Length: 182
Ligand code: HEM
Image (cartoon, rainbow, N blue to C red; front, side, top):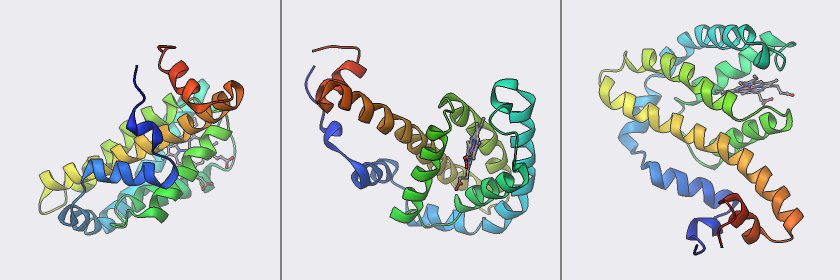
């Protein structure tokens, strides 16, 4: 297998790469900003449903036993920021840091990824109130895809870093992660 150009993309450039891939337009950003108030009003319902779901499942409940009210607040802010219209470096670094926090608590990546289902459900209620709901849904889905990619990136960065340290070489580590093909 040949080396891939994407392997050479690091840090900040990874995030630029994703933003370019998603091709979020100025019009789409504006549609989202105009929904910020609706997002704010739906955020408490989101955090309520989010923690109900995590607490109902014993394997996720063991991660969220304390400071639930405070956590609900940070989740609500995270949700409203999806509609901030500013998706530059500060936004993306902030999201990456949140991903890293989940890596550090030993949470399997499948859980945050699966919870995006609930974010989509509430996000669709918000976009329904846009004067251009179809376009607003497309824009919202791009932001959600960006968060899925960033969460995953936080996990992959950690795995790759440790594997590269063990193998003494990132290229070998990438090949091993690809199933050991030469
Ligand atoms: C869509 C998925 C998720 C989002 C958007 C999300 C969002 C957040 C945010 C914004 C924070 C606060 C970070 C900070 O301190 O600045 C946080 C912390 C936390 N999240 Fe999540 N989360 C998600 C999934 C999960 C899941 C599935 C669990 C557990 C099963 C979880 C458990 C926690 C815990 C325990 C903390 C506190 C970590 C610490 O401060 O030590 N999260 N999350």
